[in-house]
Image (cartoon, rainbow, N blue to C red):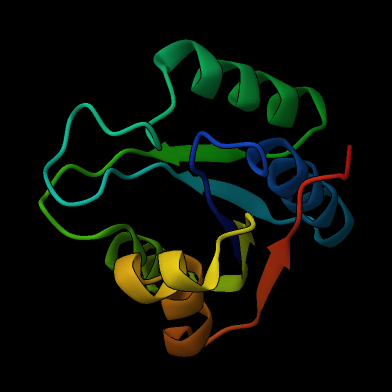
Length: 132
């Protein structure tokens, strides 16, 4: 069994990773980190650097958690990649970071988090960044 973390390089990323790691430790699960661009974009600000992903992998390994990092570039949206990873890895849950967006921003751009929550077959935990 695994926990799938939808990782985007944004302010909620650390909080979501911390939660996912704690759950992986508590439930003796593998942690699968999915860092996907929007479609085929290679200059997407949501993509983490190799160094950032290596740091997450090192933290998980130090905590005794098996970790797998996926960076799919198949042209699918992030929602599809996260949901497919959850299915492939028999996920116990999906963890996502959330961020504040205006009502207009949600209407125009849609929300990857909302689509994952609505379409997932497993529980989805949405983690907010700390205030301040």
